[in-house]
Length: 263
Length: 347
Ligand SMILES: Nc1ncnc2c1ncn2[C@@H]1O[C@H](COP(=O)(O)OP(=O)(O)O)[C@@H](O)[C@H]1O
Ligand SMILES: [Mg+2]
Image (cartoon, rainbow over all chains, first blue to last red; front, side):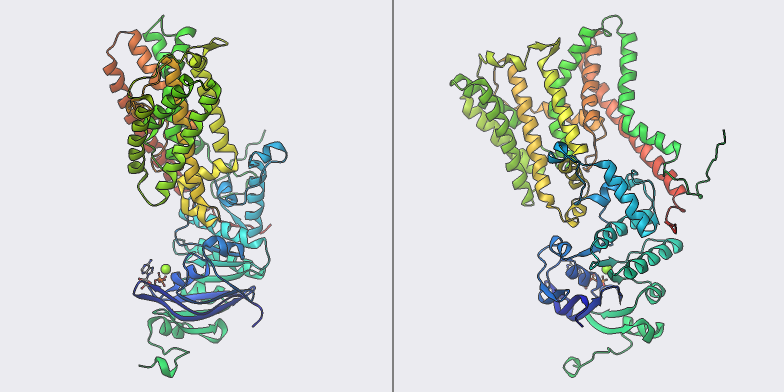
């Protein structure tokens, strides 16, 4: 399994006395979409936050392209090529789409003005428009303030922000927490095809969702969490709806049950 | 000439443009205060004719608004970046007294001014660093307000430091017909406006005020920009304190808390949201000018200054209502036309 883009080994995570993650082993390969399913409180968001450096696991090991990493902050994960699209979109409402997409990687003007830190707004807008086009998404004009976008458009901008940043390096890893929760049918389809397109471009995607049909159609592989444990990890082609529902609700026994766990 | 009117659904126009009505509403929101000022100027020109509409009176208004504007700039930058800095009067008093003390003890005027300005920035740095520790900035800056006015009184020995005639070049002197405070204010606002809208650090500072989490997730040290906001605010406070001192050629150690209210009114009139992240300094400048304009016109007509305060308050409430109305109409229109907004482009 040398081609794992991101690999987590034996991750434990406690919130005080709450054990949110319990011995999680999970990996995603380059160009693969890994679906992460589970009931509310199963630990999906927590696992994603560990992957993105927002939380530090109580114990366990994180490897990016085989190299062990310790993420002290989201910035560390970003440096390793990991981008997360959060459930709360965390956009700067008063600023326009272009500014949001360019935050943290601004294009400075050439010459003396650039040395003074002047931003080249025109170049930023051009780049953002081009990037959105490459992703195949059309929102509003990139000069539109984010606060004047609909929920679906905001989701697309947040997704594009993550996508444009992993897309640069072909070894990128994109983490998505419920990217379609607030979207209608058509927009969900668009987000779905966007994720698929990114994976085809070589991006490793981890997708948390409650939408089983979406997971079945966009993912290559699905892992199910139940009360902080991984109870299933299986290629989509080898499973079906009923089995997944069983694992999610706990009605179906874990694929990984061992003697030590039976108590 | 063929005019093709695209239905909202057919978003195939080469240039994405917002609908005309929305652009108009945004214009009202962003530029409404300029319109309001223009209306006031015209109305007062008629009402207080012939004394109001003269060049000399215009200069008088600008000069009267200058101090409010300088402090308002400090307040505005603080709020835009997410914190209301109440220590401004204390910092102003401290800067004035420090500069006065240095001058009366033989320091060259230029150096004394520089020290006072740096000190203002330093107070901002302390405010910022304390606030980062998770304390409420309002309480922190109330604390530094007391500390600074105490320190100012200590430096001045409890009395005003008078005879600071070497400061008149930034007080009552005129250059090219305009009083020094007007020049200083113009320079400050030009500088800060360019900084906030055109430079990387300025844009990040505004973004931090709007959503620190978004900035952090972009891999930026959001905290630095929070502190930077306080530093700029402290600098503006010190500058305002120096101009106050220069105008009367004496440094008063008593912190004048009413500056906060004037400045805050100008800032609020300019639509700078207390939630942070939005606001524009040219609007703040016009906000300060509107306050100056109103009190000037009422003074000319011999109306009691209490009425000026009351009028300002009413105006403030009216502008809040207008802004609310505009932003709800804009979002309603946008939601209506947004259903077809996400497009899978297959070019
Ligand atoms: N910040 C937190 N503090 C304490 N407990 C938390 C926190 N975040 C999540 N938890 C707990 O951890 C468990 C997993 O939560 P989460 O990862 O959000 O689940 P999911 O995203 O699968 O719904 C839940 O029991 C939840 O109550
Ligand atoms: Mg969750």
